[in-house]
Image (cartoon, rainbow, N blue to C red; front, side):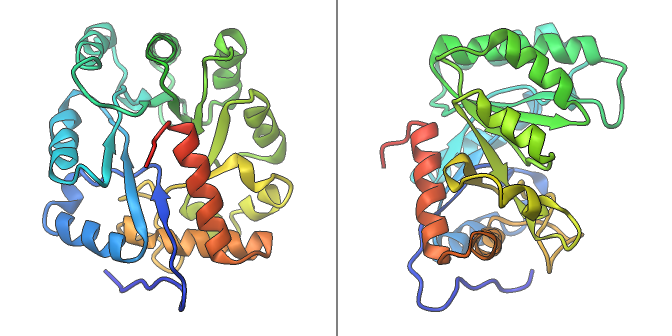
Length: 269
C-alpha cells in the first residue's frame, strides 16, 4: 500500500461513512490500517453489514476499536436469494442487542442478475420499516436500479426516513431526486477521482450540505490507486478532490461532511 499523507499543515477530522474494514482483505494489516487512517485524521469508520457471515467480524472490530468503529445491520441486495425471509428474521433479532447506527447496506442491485428482483424489493421494504421502527437511518446500495429504488422510497418515505445513497454515481436528475426526499445524503467515494467518471460535473450543481464521504474499502480505490485494494487511509484523497471541485479548503470539506455525517447518524461525539 502506498503512503498517503494529509495535505500539509492541516488538522482535519474525517469520517469514512462506508468501509468494510472487517473484510478478509484486511486480515493481515487491519490494525495498522486503522491506526494509519486515524493518524491521517480519519477518526470514525462506519461499518455496513453484508450478510449473516459478516456480522461477527464486524462486531469484533467494533469491540476492538469502540471509539472509532460503528456497526450497522442489514442484508446486502446481492445476498438476497430464495431464503431471504429467514435471513432477515435472524438479522432483525440482533438489532435490539447490538449498538448499531444504521440499517445497511440495503437496497436493489440489478447490475449482475435480475433473478431475485422481487425478493430484493421486498427485502428493501422490510428493512426500511426496521429503520423507521428503530429511528435509524438507512444506507442504500443502488446499482442499475435507481427507478426501482425511487419507486420504493416514493411509497415509504416520510419524516422518519433518512439515510445515504451509498457510492452515488448517478446523473444530476438522480442526484436531485435523491436529495429531494429531505433526509438523504449522497455518499461520495473514490469514483469522484476517476478521470472520466463525470461525477464532478454532477456535484458542482449539488450543495455540499448534501454530501458525506466514504471509501467503500476494499472496493473502488481512488486515483492513483484505482484497481488496487481500497483503504480508509485514502479518504483524504477523496476530500481533496471535493475541495478542488468546490474550490474551498480541504479542511472545510472535512468539517462540513463530518458534520453532515454526525447529524445524519445521530452521533454525539
